[in-house]
Amino acid sequence: MRAYGENVIVNQLEVPDTTAGGLYIATSAKAEYECRGEIIDVGDARNLFVGDQIIFLKGSKFSVGVGTDQEQYVVVAATDILAVL
Image (cartoon, rainbow, N blue to C red):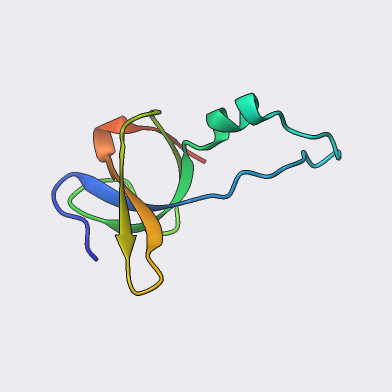
């Protein structure tokens, strides 16, 4: 799968159940973390690279299942990326 135009393909990062200090993260707070991922392919977007970890706008993603195991990836427009971590 390859990104087309000003889009990137992202492997969403798993949301941890606890913080580094051992505190449990509430389910409602996990929604905030669901907008983070690692870029696995870049279309024509500039200043973004494979391997970059990003934060993108909530609701701006399009989920895609790929392969026989239907591994989930998301397609995000470069304009919806808020930050590179």
